[in-house]
Image 1 (cartoon, rainbow, N blue to C red):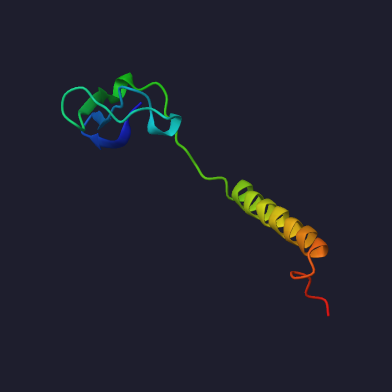
Image 2 (spheres, rainbow, N blue to C red; image 1 turned 60 degrees about the vertical axis):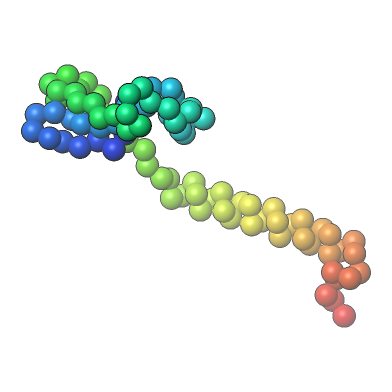
Length: 87
Protein backbone atom coordinates (compact mmCIF):
# COMPACT_ATOMS: atom_id res chain seq x y z
CA UNK A 1 0.00 0.00 0.00
CA UNK A 2 1.32 3.41 -0.92
CA UNK A 3 0.30 6.61 0.84
CA UNK A 4 0.34 9.96 -0.98
CA UNK A 5 0.81 8.31 -4.39
CA UNK A 6 2.20 10.26 -7.36
CA UNK A 7 2.61 9.32 -11.01
CA UNK A 8 6.10 9.98 -12.37
CA UNK A 9 6.69 8.75 -15.87
CA UNK A 10 5.93 5.03 -15.95
CA UNK A 11 6.14 4.59 -12.15
CA UNK A 12 3.87 5.08 -9.19
CA UNK A 13 5.69 6.71 -6.26
CA UNK A 14 4.48 6.87 -2.68
CA UNK A 15 5.25 6.35 0.97
CA UNK A 16 4.98 2.83 2.30
CA UNK A 17 4.19 2.21 5.96
CA UNK A 18 6.09 -0.75 7.34
CA UNK A 19 4.47 -1.23 10.76
CA UNK A 20 0.77 -1.03 9.94
CA UNK A 21 -1.39 1.81 8.78
CA UNK A 22 -2.27 4.62 11.20
CA UNK A 23 -5.96 3.97 10.49
CA UNK A 24 -5.62 0.52 12.04
CA UNK A 25 -3.65 1.72 15.08
CA UNK A 26 -0.24 1.03 13.58
CA UNK A 27 2.87 2.81 14.76
CA UNK A 28 4.35 5.56 12.64
CA UNK A 29 7.81 4.04 12.33
CA UNK A 30 9.73 3.48 9.13
CA UNK A 31 12.95 1.80 8.20
CA UNK A 32 15.57 4.19 6.90
CA UNK A 33 14.54 7.81 6.59
CA UNK A 34 11.43 9.08 8.39
CA UNK A 35 9.43 9.21 5.13
CA UNK A 36 10.92 6.75 2.62
CA UNK A 37 9.67 6.95 -0.97
CA UNK A 38 9.02 3.79 -2.95
CA UNK A 39 8.39 3.31 -6.64
CA UNK A 40 6.29 0.65 -8.37
CA UNK A 41 6.21 0.17 -12.13
CA UNK A 42 2.74 0.88 -13.52
CA UNK A 43 2.86 -2.47 -15.31
CA UNK A 44 3.10 -4.17 -11.88
CA UNK A 45 0.04 -2.41 -10.42
CA UNK A 46 -2.76 -4.98 -10.25
CA UNK A 47 -5.31 -3.25 -8.01
CA UNK A 48 -6.28 0.28 -7.03
CA UNK A 49 -8.40 1.15 -3.99
CA UNK A 50 -9.55 4.49 -2.69
CA UNK A 51 -11.36 5.52 0.45
CA UNK A 52 -14.48 7.66 0.28
CA UNK A 53 -16.73 9.40 2.76
CA UNK A 54 -20.33 8.17 2.63
CA UNK A 55 -22.36 11.35 3.04
CA UNK A 56 -25.66 9.59 3.74
CA UNK A 57 -24.13 7.43 6.47
CA UNK A 58 -22.44 10.47 8.04
CA UNK A 59 -25.68 12.47 8.07
CA UNK A 60 -27.60 9.50 9.52
CA UNK A 61 -24.99 9.13 12.27
CA UNK A 62 -25.16 12.83 13.21
CA UNK A 63 -28.97 12.80 13.21
CA UNK A 64 -29.03 9.61 15.26
CA UNK A 65 -26.66 11.03 17.87
CA UNK A 66 -28.72 14.22 18.00
CA UNK A 67 -31.91 12.22 18.53
CA UNK A 68 -30.33 10.26 21.38
CA UNK A 69 -29.12 13.48 23.05
CA UNK A 70 -32.54 15.11 22.65
CA UNK A 71 -34.32 12.03 24.06
CA UNK A 72 -31.94 11.93 27.04
CA UNK A 73 -32.49 15.64 27.72
CA UNK A 74 -36.27 15.24 27.54
CA UNK A 75 -36.13 12.24 29.89
CA UNK A 76 -33.99 14.12 32.42
CA UNK A 77 -36.07 17.30 32.11
CA UNK A 78 -39.26 15.39 32.84
CA UNK A 79 -37.73 14.05 36.07
CA UNK A 80 -36.02 17.24 37.30
CA UNK A 81 -38.18 20.32 37.99
CA UNK A 82 -35.18 22.66 37.52
CA UNK A 83 -34.80 21.60 33.89
CA UNK A 84 -38.54 21.46 33.24
CA UNK A 85 -39.33 24.68 31.36
CA UNK A 86 -43.11 24.28 31.28
CA UNK A 87 -44.57 26.99 33.55
